[in-house]
Image (cartoon, rainbow, N blue to C red; front, side, top):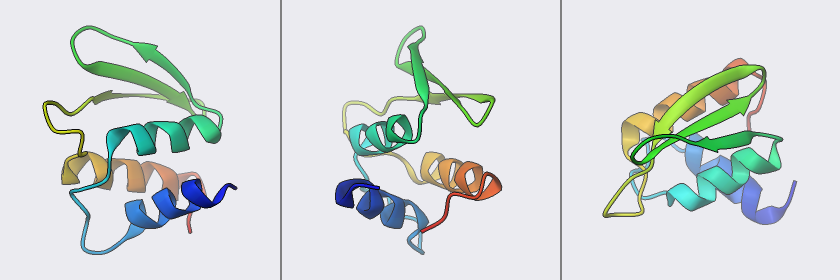
Length: 84
């Protein structure tokens, strides 16, 4: 795993939950794991990974991912054995 992706993974698993992780970094990390993305209506993005489809809302106007989405992604990764 590239250094920048391992750093993103560490940020996702950091306690307390970080509210300043850039969505582009999370999206790039998930794609590096093999995720497929599909643009949906509005700011929604469908992510297919681990045989599961999840829909996330791209943050705007701030590029930072909210804490709830970070927690959801962390749980999804943990359930599939992706941990730092």
